[in-house]
Length: 395
Image (cartoon, rainbow, N blue to C red):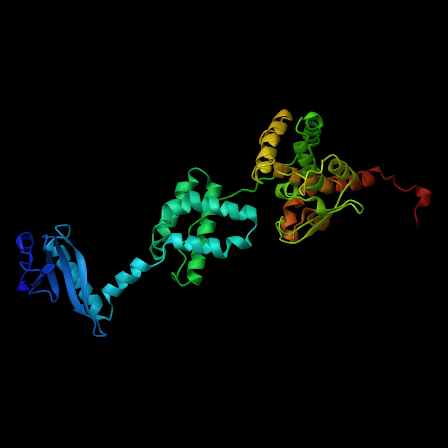
């Protein structure tokens, strides 16, 4: 083990072992423990020998030569010495860093611990966001390496295409890193402070003329199964997954009650709703071909019926001149009709399956026309009132 002041010139010509040893070490006489390791095949790398506070001897590889020039390697050795002097162990830190969990590991923990608790549709959406954006961007990186600037960069990247989806990815990332905090894989959440894109709620209501056109198209549309599904959406104000996932055992035809199971409802509670005569008439047109009202075709994945209904809906709305109207907008229109009929928000919330009245309050602005009609009626009554005759006056 030769001792001398190491430099780049010596590093280029330093000899390797001449015996059976795997390598030869050349130590520096200026920086304590700093050395050059030369293997039998003349591969060269800079090392630092040190002793931890616990008395363990370590040899830390700084980097290979010539990728690391001598001056840079010496500066790194001096930096490491400062860490060692305050009780750190660079070798152990590197080992822990290499074995530290990756974002891919964090995703596996999330999928195992949290997805089984979510509705099937929400779990499927999470899997899609993870697959499309998170795994490809962060999957191989260590959980502790992700910075807020990394999250902001991904959020901006997605925002250029789909601002709303960018917010969904940000929310999912925040949940992931909250899990990392609970698992003690990192102390902070890098999503904190990342601004969301502004979102504006989209509420579309069918006018009376639009409803008439839709009903006319439904009367002649050839896919009667799709017609029944759309009709139930209009008549019950239900969510699409509640209708398409409904089973015959949920319906009490004698009492006219549909009990939606908690696995389909957004509030995760069973939801009982009364069925109108037109709704019962639509149900009577659906052939019973299994447990579900709308079963998938034989040999086709269960979710295929959703795709079929969506395809049919696009054709129906085109024929009715309702481009851009979603199936979910039929739910908004159902609430609008209830408001027009004079029902209060609590009753509407019960029919829609809202757990909180605050959720139903987004329909409160629909009462403007009802209230205007009320004050107009009072105004007409006041204006139309005749003044009392003179002999009728009380003296």
